[in-house]
Image 1 (cartoon, rainbow, N blue to C red):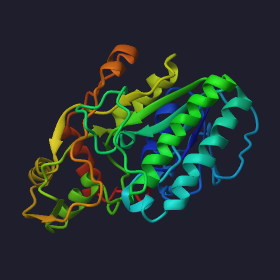
Image 2 (image 1 turned 45 degrees about the horizontal axis):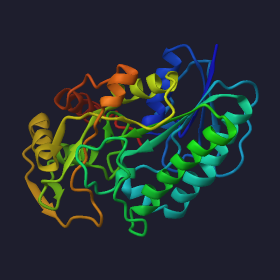
Image 3 (image 1 turned 90 degrees about the vertical axis):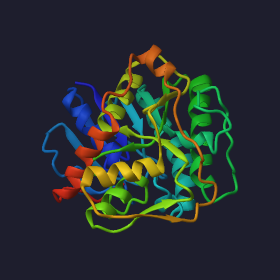
Image 4 (image 1 turned 60 degrees about the horizontal axis):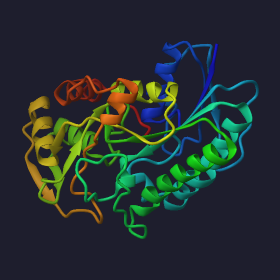
Length: 314
């Protein structure tokens, strides 16, 4: 049995990845300091091959026994979190990535970095291919997250080139599904919560800015496929089906049957106007593409919220 270490494994995405890895027959060591994750996200796991360690990855980490895969997901991922924890976000992107890579090196494990589409900033190229270097404001409020992930990518490639670590880089676009926090601050959980509470849905700016939304089951499947591949350069993982935020709000209202109206608020600083992945490399290298459309993904997400199963933890 191979062992996978998942940093940030008690978070929204990390907990789904732990589920998937266990289903694939791996032993899983989940590492999380619970800053934005939650034990509720993993409380359903009763598998004897699952171990939880409460540890802040900005400090050195040791794992007893072998480790074959290291998935480095640890980081605040929502603007509401990284604006609240700017220094910690920078530290987990730097020290945390250094420590996770050091663990992978010591165990001779494959390493996968969960990077982000935010490395493209407010892009001047659309849709965004992996060859695009981005348009990021390093000193803006979002820079603590954007630059932490860009630094993490540089460190992963340095460890690969100079230390021979077997690294992968996934650039993850907007992902959603059950276990997102109702007050996460990101569009889908915010809209769903507001619609279920019959409150106005708050759309920033004109609502014409676009995003692409990938259901969590599809994304996790892509992460695993990338981890098992031989590709070391970044690979975009996301759904290329592009929606405006106004269209998304309207879709949530329809899906919930809510009577909520849509209201508009000021656009946050450096909020990207477009965001859509070019997933040509994922299709060619991994044979991967999303299978769950937004309507079906929203139905599943809304059911988890409405049934009282929305779980705290980013």
